[in-house]
Length: 202
Image 1 (tube, rainbow, N blue to C red):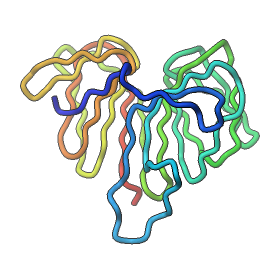
Image 2: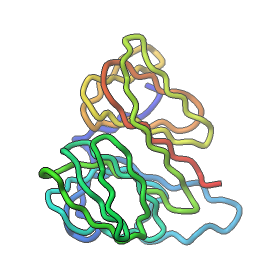
Image 3: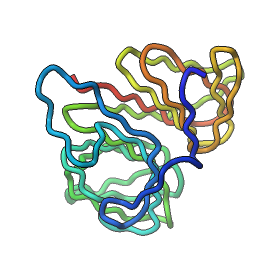
Image 4: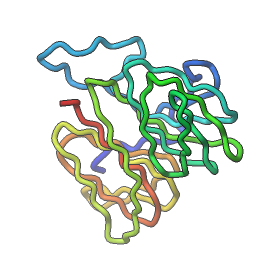
């Protein structure tokens, strides 16, 4: 397969930290312990985490001290995040990075939305999020480097991951493939994916 397939139907549902909504955890992890002292971990137990949240109404976001966030709208028309007093329009499928320490409030533009959240602990892990188009019957390869975790989430239907033996596994919408370390994922089909790369902070 080249990676572990994580299914939307199996994601664990949990309440928001502030109780204002629900989120489904896709996957999370800890970085290897470095030789030098690292920032103390808080009680949330992760160095990085990917989740999908349902936002049914505007209101404040939970605060996550020491966490960097990238949010990407995967359903809905749009929203405005006000981060430390500055409004930022968030368009569909356009990743937006901000600090979890910031005072953040959400205003919905046209009804409920669903968003993908990537969180990384500052000083431990760094995330790069890119929306990519897959439009190939032959296959699109996404390489993964040593020390890197590559997560590919299907933002649309019509995507499949190809194993080393050539077998094809279809991905439903918001299913995710996780690959760690040297190698590559091969995708086939016609659609859009979120390409998430997690690396240790230098």
